[in-house]
View 1: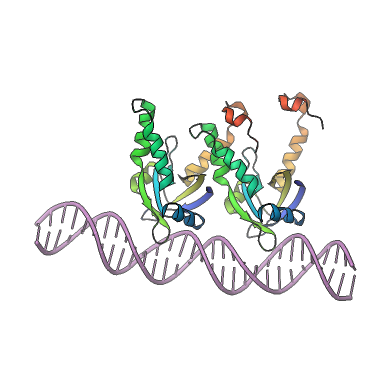
View 2: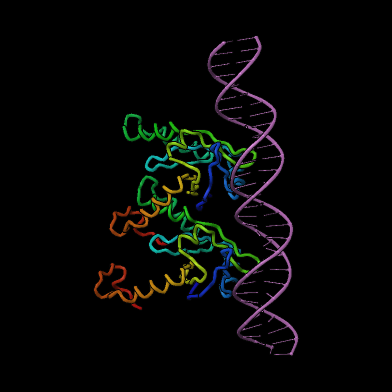
Length: 151
Length: 151
DNA sequence: AAATCGGTGGGAAAAAGTGGGAACACGTGG
DNA sequence: CCACGTGTTCCCACTTTTTCCCACCGATTT
């Protein structure tokens, strides 16, 4: 699936050239159709091939509407989910509202994360990474799922 | 179905241009007929294609009439439900009472939420969203459906 | 060195959004 | 019952945005 960190640029119209190594896979998987939405914890965007997203959307839709936590998640994720399509030169157009949410300026980082990409403003990505490295994980509570993890 | 966040404007007559990407779907699903009503928890409007609404109304009507919570929900939702129709240029007219309920001024956000839209005053939407993002979800009770959710 | 490929920019055509005017319907009061 | 005023609906025209397409530039390959 998708791996790796790529420096990309957004031009003045908000267009982003998808690195070529991913293009073929995206086209064969979803005919070039992608969904971008916001991440609920960090100021970055999540980009899924359409079929991947549809599974997630289904799960979200099934959550109870009257539960406030579920409602919040739906509003953030489904509420911001925007259809994107690779154009004839392999670019996608990031709409202004999402650009704004993730404070995207000209240079950004596109991070492969398995079934999706994350798109970060470059400066924010670098800063955040420094933060993550600084945190002393040994001092933290590990959730049980992590206790047995072997890397 | 419906997803994504759209900035829309209400003109001086209270008309709202439905973003074109939704129009076709609305016309084929309900011949352009929609129902708007109020949200029970937030100051926003809910907009359903007519068939979707009819299902919801049925569910609401089946609730026990003697239960005060159910009664309240019925009064709010069914009581405020208003028929809307896409006009020849794809606009709907939001009646003054609903405009008032949701404190809608000139710029608003139309949020796709699967089988319906939510319509928020722009400022209120932005403020609310910031609130939702601030909440530390790990500190909250998660409904069991969410525990295993993998995005 | 030429050709190809990936990335970038910009211009023109098309489409969408916006505003307003005129015609029509409606209700009210004389 | 008619005249008037208000509010609604329909339609047209203007402006802005979006989309599509083509051309250029630089790097890499043959």
